[in-house]
Length: 449
Image 1: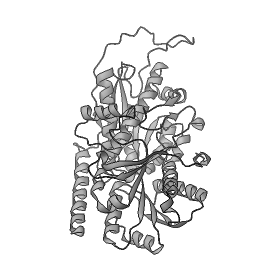
Image 2 (image 1 turned 180 degrees about the vertical axis):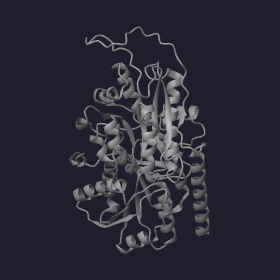
Image 3 (image 1 turned 135 degrees about the vertical axis):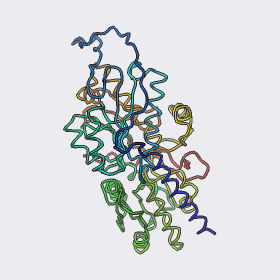
Image 4 (image 1 turned 90 degrees about the vertical axis):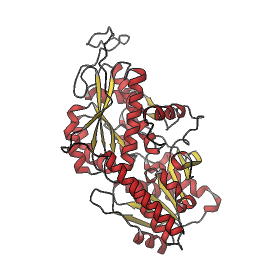
């Protein structure tokens, strides 16, 4: 009975992914971008001149039109997989981007109460080459990119962002982004998640002495999680007994099965496994572990491993912890939670509570603060937005994510607190909080290069 129920659940997951991919696909055949969030033409009543003033007490002038800004509407790019297996992350992320700016446009009139925001969405299929083509297609039509999904994609596009002087918001948490002037990073990096997750697990007395291993995608994302695990285990005096990899997701990679990797972990006696993956591969690993009834390791998953549907999977209910950030959905003791819930219900009612929706919402919140600063400075040019990132001060997220002191890239300080969750069928996002804001005592020794 267990095997039959499990296979039905995996079939549901496969269909769910196909539906998401189909819904995220283009309606046209020529790869044109999708522009959303219609902007109304508003009459400006501001009396300031177009020229700025050197006096400290004088307001800056109105920002001049330029790429992505026509004097009335600010256009932001989104480079994300809206089709393919990783669309299961990209679509809710983009829904979070969209809902935040829909609410801002409708309820506050846009940036500075005057400039509506439009999103220009391009499907990257989680492929760096495709992403480069989509980037080139719209770079002259946007002031910045609010979302670029995927560590390999961000790495591929970073030289272009630098050459073109454009800001991009990475929907990925590699610690390398902290020191990149062109990247509007938010949240605790993957390395921080892994450090705090491993430290939390081994701080529980019942877990002392358990054999630790890693299983990670063979790419920069996988490397980031393993780097954090290596830092934690060095400080804890624990050995990583086995480092196992699997092929990274790509548009051409077939569905990953994990029987060889599970056999390798079992042979090494791995009792605890750090898992660095996307949700599609979480399903594959869970299948392999479920069918290997004699081997039941604890899995510590990085935040992108999760999908709410997984809360129904018996193996994960018993053996899985998610390393992420923030509070449980609906916890209104967190200042920004009621507003997040209201905006989803009002502007994205068809989107279920989802950790990726939350992240997209927070990305837009960060970009909003930077754009407000740029408008206050009278400059929505690419140079102006880069300057605004240096002068904006601390980006705040109303308790939904850790505050992030900005400034010059060498001075930025990412959040270092992580939350641990467990699957719970029926809970919003399929998760309940185990511990909020855990911080390894040696976290301050980690260097953001």
